[in-house]
Image 1 (cartoon, helix red, strand yellow):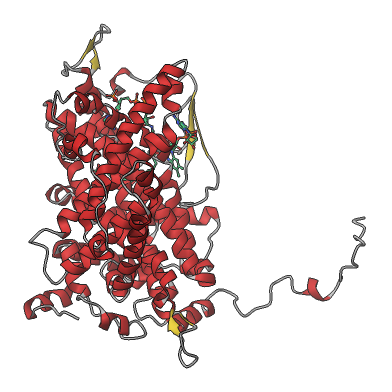
Image 2: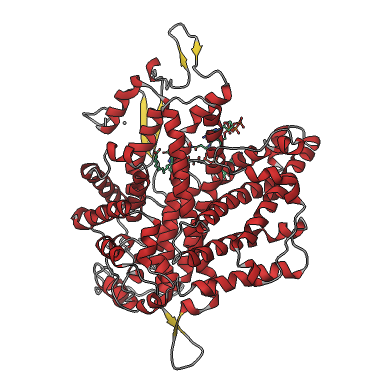
Amino acid sequence: MITASKSDAVSQDGLLPDLPNGPLSEYRRKASFNWKDMAMFLEDEDIIAFKNKIFSTLESDPLFYRQPGVDLPLEKYRELTFLRCKKIFEYNFLTFEATMEKPQKMLVLINCLGMYDWSLSTKYFLDTQVFGVAIGNTGSERHETILHQTQNMEIRNPKTLLPMPGVMVGDIGRKLGQNGLDNGFAMFHNVRIPYENLLNRTGDISSSGNYTSAYKDPKQRLGASLGTLSSGRVSIISMVVTNLKLAITIAIRFSATRRQFGPTEKEEIPVLEYQLQQWRLIPYLAAAYALDYFSVGFFFNLIELQIGILMKDRSPRQAELGKEIHALSCAGKPLASWTAQHGAQECREACGGHGFLAMNRLGDIRNDNDPNCTYEGDNNVLLQQTSNYLLGLVQSIHEDNAPCESPLGSIHFLNDYKTILKRKFTASTIRECLDCAVALDAYKWLVCYLLRESHDKLQQEKQRAANDFDARNNSQVYYCRSLALAFIEHTVLQRYYDYTHDPSTPGSLQPVLKKLCCLYGLWSLNKHIAVLYQGGYFAGELPGRIVQDAILDLCAQLKDDAVSLVDAIAPPDFILNSPIAKADGELYKNLWSAVLQGEKVLERPSWWPEFCCNKPVIGKPRSQL
Ligand SMILES: CC(C)(COP(=O)(O)OP(=O)(O)OC[C@H]1O[C@@H](n2cnc3c(N)ncnc32)[C@H](O)[C@@H]1OP(=O)(O)O)[C@@H](O)C(=O)NCCC(=O)NCCSC(=O)CCCCCCCCCCCCCCC(=O)O
Ligand SMILES: Cc1cc2nc3c(=O)[nH]c(=O)nc-3n(C[C@H](O)[C@H](O)[C@H](O)COP(=O)(O)OP(=O)(O)OC[C@H]3O[C@@H](n4cnc5c(N)ncnc54)[C@H](O)[C@@H]3O)c2cc1C
C-alpha cells in the first residue's frame, strides 16, 4: 500500500477519519493505493468538509434518526419528509453567496441529502431550485414576488391551505419509490392567468398584443428559452451516479466479507474472489468512477450555460452551447440512470438473500433510482434528441463544407469521419487491449458507423413511408437509439481517458484509475459487439475473445483495490444505512444487531391464537352466516 506524505496525512486525518479495523482490513492492506489520497483527489478539502458538516448535522439531529428497513405508513413518511425538509431550510447549509462562490456545492448538497433519502432531497430541490431556477431564468423582475411566495410556502391560500377558486388539486397516490414525496395533480377551471405572469425573458407581448423579442434568430431564442430545462437532466446524471456509488459500496463490502466455498475444505473465501462475482460488480465500480467524473465536469458546463443566460449572452457560441448540452444531457441521463438501474439490481442479487432484506437498503436504492429513467423526460424519448442533433451534422460531414465544431468539443472527432470509417480493430493480444486507447478508437468507429447507418436508414424510410413521422419512428431501434448511446459512451470515455492520462493526476493513483478507465471502456464496448462485427470493424474470433479476456483480466487486477475504491466514495455508516456494508466489515454482528433492534422482533404476532384454534377443515369453507 502506498502512503501519503506527513503533511497530507495531517489534513487528511482531520477530514477523513481512519476506518475501523475488522474483516475488511485485509483487502485494505492489499490495495495498491491509499483510499484517503483517492478521496482527496476526487474532491477538494472544502467539498469534503462541506459534506462532513451535512452528514454530522443530520446524524446529531433526532429528527433524522431512522431504523434500517422500517416501512413507514404513507402519511407518516410524508409528514416526516416535510418536517425534515423544513429543518433543512433552517440549517441553511448553502447560502446564496456560497452557491455563487462555488456552484458545485449545490450538486453536493442534492447528493448528500439524496444519500440520506431521495424523497427529502427531491422535495427540497424541486421547491427551491427546479421551480425557482425556471422562473428566475425565464422570467424577469416582475416575477420576483412569485419566488418570495414560494420561499414562504404561499405554491395555495396561505391561511387556510385551500386551493384558490377554480383550482382543483389532489394527490395521485402511492408510487413505486420516493414515497416521502407527495406528487399531485392540479386542474384549472375558468381560471384567468394574469398577463404579467407570462415568463418574458426571451419574448413578450405588449398591452396592444404585439410580440417582441430581443432575439432576432428564432433558433437562438428557442435555445435560450429551453436551455434552462437542461439543469434537471444534468443534475439527475449526478444523482443516479450517487445511487450507483451507494449500491456498489454495499455490494463490494458485502462480497469482501461474505465467505463461501474455497479451493480447499479448510477455509472459506470471500465471494469477491470468485471470477463471476468480480465480473458482475467491478465493471459497475468502474462505471461509477467514470460517470462520476463526467457528471461533475458536465455540471460545470451547465453552469457556464446558465451564466450566459443570466448575462443575456446572445452570441452564436451560447446558442451552440445550449444545443450541445441539450444533446449530451438527453443521452447522459439515459446512460447514467440505466447504468445505475442495472447496477443496483446486480448489486441486490450479488448480495444474495441479504440483498433482498429491506434493512440493507438495496431495494430502496433501486426503487428510488427508478423514476430517474422517466422524469425530466422518458429516456427513450430523450435519446431521439441526441440522435437528431447528430443527424443534423451529416450534411456538413458528407460535403466537407464546414468543420464539425462545438463549444465542448464532443463532435470534433467527426471531422475525421471518412478516415475513421476505414479503420479496423488491430489489437491482437489481451495486453494491447489493456490500453484504453483501444476501446476509445473502437468507439470513434462505432459512432461514425451508426451515424452513417442511421442516416441511410432514415433516407430509405423517408422514401418508403408516407410521412416523416413514420420514417423517424421506424429508424430508432438498432439505429438512432444505438447511435445516441454510443455517442454519449464515447464522450464519457474520452473525458475520463483525458483525465486519467493527464500528467497532473498523481502517479500513485494513475495505475488504478487507468485500469478503471480501460475496464469501463471495454465493458461498455462489449455490449455493441454485434455491430462491431456487422460493420466489419471486428473480423474473426480473436477481437471478441481478447476483449472479453481483457475485461476478466482487469476485474482480477482490480479486485484487491475494490474495497479501497469504495472506501474513497462511501458516505459514513449513518448515511449509507446498510448493516451489511458498515465500514468495520462486521457483517454478521451488524446484521444481527439490526435484526434484534427491530420492533416486536421476538414477539408472537398479534393474531397468533388463530393458529391454535378454528383450525381449517381442508376442502370445507366455513359458513359465513
Ligand atoms: C424535447 C422533447 C423530448 C421533444 O420535444 P419536441 O417534440 O418539441 O421536439 P423537437 O425535436 O421538435 O424539439 C424542438 C427543438 O427544441 C430543441 N430543444 C428542446 N429542448 C431543448 C433544450 N433543453 N435546450 C436546447 N434546445 C432544446 C430541440 O433540439 C429542437 O431543436 P431543432 O428544431 O433545432 O432540432 C420534449 O418533449 C421534452 O422535453 N419532453 C420531456 C418533458 C419533460 O422533461 N418534462 C419535465 C417535467 S418536470 C419533471 O419531470 C420533474 C421530476 C422531478 C425531478 C427531480 C430531480 C430534479 C432535482 C434537480 C435539482 C436541480 C438543481 C438545479 C441546479 C442549477 O440549475 O443550478
Ligand atoms: C416520480 C415522478 C415525478 C414527476 N414529477 C413531475 C413534476 O414535478 N412535474 C412535471 O411536470 N412532471 C413530473 N413527472 C412527469 C414526467 O416528467 C413524465 O412522466 C415524463 O416526462 C414522461 O412522460 P409521460 O409520463 O407522459 O410518458 P409517455 O409520453 O406517456 O410515455 C409512455 C411510453 O411511450 C413511449 N413514447 C412516448 N413518446 C414516444 C416517442 N415519441 N417515441 C417513442 N416512444 C415514445 C415512452 O418511451 C414510454 O415508454 C414526474 C414523473 C415521475 C415518475
